[in-house]
Image (cartoon, rainbow, N blue to C red; front, side, top):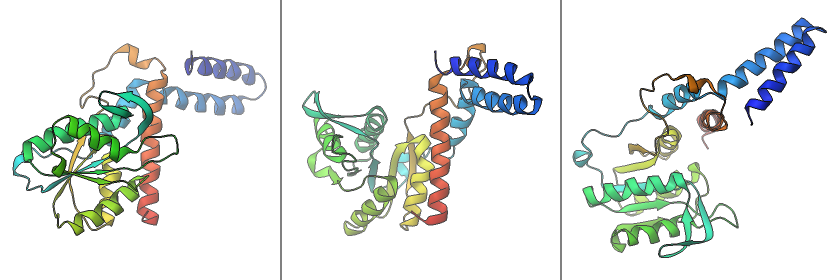
Length: 242
């Protein structure tokens, strides 16, 4: 099964090329080796762990002084049945929302939900999230929605405008751990220094070795792709300020 079958085919190609050109065979082998490593949980846990550990939640969030929780969206599905309506959140934003609810009950501060409708057939994130928050017991007056943003830069820009308008000064930023570094950078560009509260972790902080982690897996490749995407997007943000 992919991606293992592609690695086997590539190694077969290396064996054939070795008879024609050793340099070419060596080049294909190196590319295959890199691809193989990116497909292993052993490497994915290291790269994703490094990214997720860039920010850690405050040890005592009750005394952080946060006056609002900013919850960033990450994908929604429209026209699907849910417990109390139509439209549902994807896995990552659902995890983020669960953390935001628990924090809201702990701190008793408003939640600002940031996230619009990215595609014509995707869900209106902030609206779906607001409905779910109400069903989980968050008072309506404690819910603020920002419905225009379709990416992280816009999350920060539009949320910052609302925060200033409503005189909030110390937001607690909730998003997936892998996304937190770029999110913080975007909020810093808007002259806000939120308190980072990463959630939705995907790997353990101190993973242990097991021989099965050397097996190529599509899930491991996806984690590494996510890390590379975040690094590229962070570099673009730092260079272009967007």
